[in-house]
Structure formats: C-alpha cells, structure tokens
Length: 109
Image 1 (cartoon, rainbow, N blue to C red):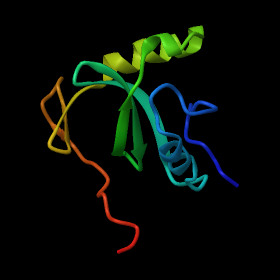
Image 2: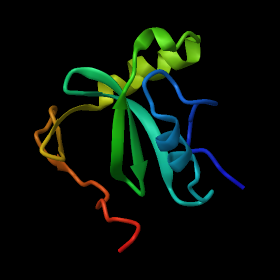
Image 3: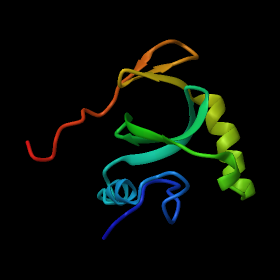
Image 4: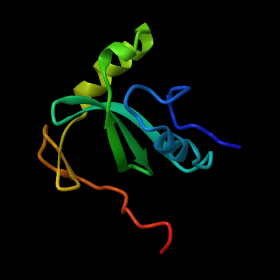
C-alpha cells in the first residue's frame, strides 16, 4: 500500500512533475519520510525529509493553498526554516550551519 508522508497533498500541486510526485509517495509507511514548508533562497518551498535528512525541495505558490490550516502551517514553518541552497547543499540562514542531505545514488548501482 502506498503511504503518503506527513501533510502530503492529495494530488500533484502546481509545478511538481507527476512522476516525481509518485516516487515521493511510494515510500513505506515507517520510513521516516515527512515534509514541511520552508523558505529556500527566499522562495516558498515544500521541503522533503527522510530520517531528518533533506531529500529535496520544490517551489510552490502561496495562492495554491487556500485553507486556514495550511496558511497556518506556512506561517509557522517558514519562521522556523529559512535556508539557502547552492551547489547541492542546504545552509540554515538563521545559524549558518550546513544541513545534511540524503545521498543521491542511482537506483541502477
């Protein structure tokens, strides 16, 4: 059974490619996969985690989210996570520390 991560929307939002969305949803239930809103390079994103390591992000538009609950998540999460992304590395703008990412290994290797 396909289990979505925490707060994952029902369908591919805005500019997310459908194939990528299916891969992200095909994680086992207890894999530790989650996501939250963040500011990456001063743009709103959905940031995906696997066991406290960043898997990736994609940019979203605020007007795609209309419920009070998601607007509350956006305002709360963006205050906690403000990152910069450069050369495949994430850096926290608040304290300047690098954040660990999941290694991107090819599935054929």
